Length: 240
Length: 350
Picture 1 (cartoon, rainbow over the protein chains, first blue to last red):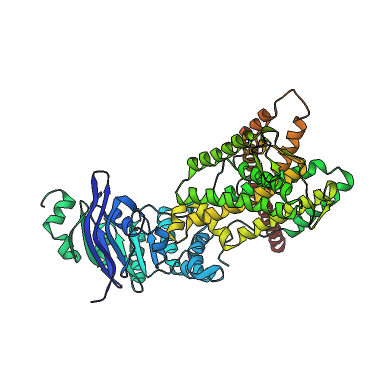
Picture 2 (cartoon, rainbow over the protein chains, first blue to last red):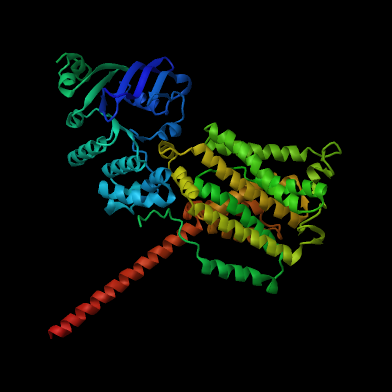
């Protein structure tokens, strides 16, 4: 079995009296695609933010290791510079800039001023965004904006890709396309995908970690997880 | 080409040369005292336009760096005697102060209104402090700070290395114009560079830029420093023009005026705030000669009207009109071509 690339040890996040992430021990291995699911308020996004440095300081306990390096307390940009691409829950894009400019800013950091244009062309072709390259991102539909954000993540050439609710607000056609894109990214990169759309998660055919009340409830393949009575209770509110 | 131009465009050298020729010819037909002051104000406006318009950092206290530049020059020139080192200090001192304050604010994650308040407070503290420096105790080397009365009669700009060759009148006007054009070109160079594009990204979405791996506080501190240095140079040139430095360089009026110039000229442009500083500066000087209406009231009214009627400011609105006009002309040409082809087709069929 390969070495873990992301590991949390007793990771805890506390907001006042609320324990949003409760001593989570999590391991992700090279080239793995892992889905984090759970109902609203289960702690998925908080867990996601705590491993990407968006939550740190006194609220955070435990350790986060990325390729064996303890990154607890690191700032987000420093963690990203290890080779990590992050897509946030609410699309975080530059609305006042064009699609190409959004991608360029991402490519510029890893490929430099002169090499960025080539990477932008590559991403535009790869994600079929060429037709809207010169349009302002703020004028695009939600699905297109999601795709642009994924494009900015990829233009950074990450080896670890973290996507928070990438399928939120997408049409069925867009979701199908996104599934194909994620599977393609996973050929080269390790991935964590946070979502609660069960159809989407099942289609990714990956190992699933279920969060409930800030802790890991169960881990396993889709069939095992979705047939578990505890998971059904968490999702449906009763032992269906 | 991917079309990632960030709305900066190329320097229009023909326009720039034409403007430089006009400015160079101005002393032939007009006195240079007032145009020198207007060019200094334009430089001051440019310093804020770069930082606010492109990096999204709104400082309510940009006069602090203008004033520090003026005081640094006056104090240093009294002590050094020759103007080269004081001129450099007038850029370095505000830059260092801006770097320290900027680092404290940006690494401390202070933004939006809190940043505005903090920058304003710095200016007010400097204003209060300088007003309270009357008396012999307040001196730096040979320079007495002079409290409310400020520092008069310090050695003004000279030819580098020769204190006996003073630069004043038309020659000083040319120095200021060269500084303004040089600063404009430096701003354009910054904006066309990777650094400038990253600043635009930060203005648009700080979180995303952080998530792309950029050290946002470092970039913001850097542009705050550059802008502070540029404001310091404007302050130094102002001190040499006025031949006296008083605490009014740190006043609320000074800090408000530069904000108005940038808003009226248009955020996200360099030329707009330069023109606004010149036009509104001329208006201010004209109003200063009468006693019927208060100067500040007129400037305030102009600001309100601009915010209500053309919220993007003059330069971006003018650019949008030009684009629309060009589109209309293209459509008309296309319609004329289609009509001509139709007529030709009908004639051929007949």
